[in-house]
Image (cartoon, rainbow, N blue to C red; front, side, top):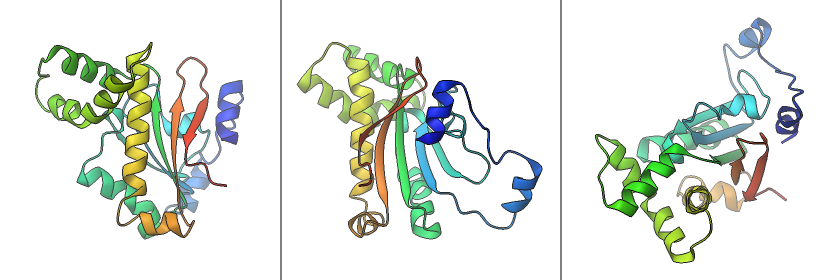
Length: 189
């Protein structure tokens, strides 16, 4: 979060982004966090948290949609490498959420495998439909963050680490307008 504050202020340090760092992590990595974020080109985790090479395990999918392979990728850091933090990072004005919302509202199927993203986002859509709100897209983004974070917290490989307080799983929201990351849930005490 300190790195995000530098990003917001326009004062990034761009740490660990030089040939010396590349050499230092060439043989072994020990990232301090795993980030599951959207594929959106405006939301690169290494930049918005002002970190560098070897600092994050980054997994990116449309609207943080998970599948067995994605879940396995997220599990890798904590289970195989001892990474103590997972951040599920959604963002303002998510195009995948907007497209899924329109598809589910209109009953129109999106082409190709985009329909699978829509299916994966249906629980967030249904949650928002129950509660309503002024901005259903933003509400759906936030619902998706919480649903995925909760799914990871109950994951058989991760739940024991969470219970032992060896792993925190944080849901967070990124503002495209300000660059700030807001923690929604799961902040370590």
